[in-house]
Amino acid sequence: MQEFYINQNSTLPIIEVSLIQNGRDNFNNFFEFLQDSNITFSMINVDNGNVKVSNEPCYLKLKKSDSCTEQYNICYQWKKRDTKEKGTYLGIFEITFNGNISSPDFESPNGNLIVPIREKISISIQ
Figure 1 (cartoon, rainbow, N blue to C red):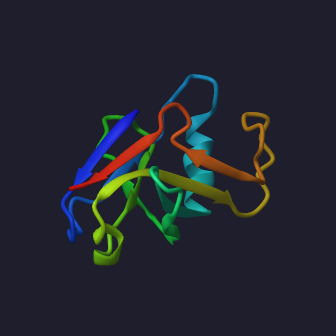
Figure 2: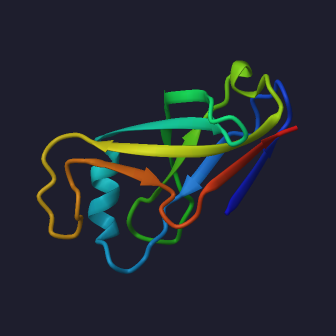
Figure 3: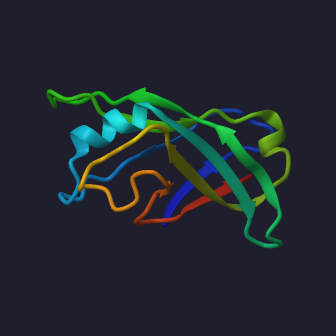
C-alpha cells in the first residue's frame, strides 16, 4: 500500500502517482493515449465509507527522465475543503480514455482505468 500524509487544512504537498511499467504494455503509446484522457481523483473515508472528494480533475506532470520518450505522473492539487477533516482515506485516480484507441496492447481501451493497479493509496490527514 502506498501511504500519503498531509496536514489538516493543507493544500501541499500535491499527491502524485507514477504509472508502473510492467513490460506487458506499450508504454510509449499509452502515454500518448493518456494525454487525450480525462483523469479524476476521488477520496473515500475508510471508517465510514463517505466520499470526501468525488471525481475532481487531475493534471499530468512531465517526469524527469533519461528516456527518449516523454512520460508523465498523474497529480492532484488539494483544496482546503479536501483536508478539512482528520482521518484515513482511500485515494483513487481514474482515467477515462477519449477517442478511439485501437491497440492490442490494452484490454479495455475505451473504458476506464483505475490507478494505481498494483497498490492502493492510503491517505492520512493529520
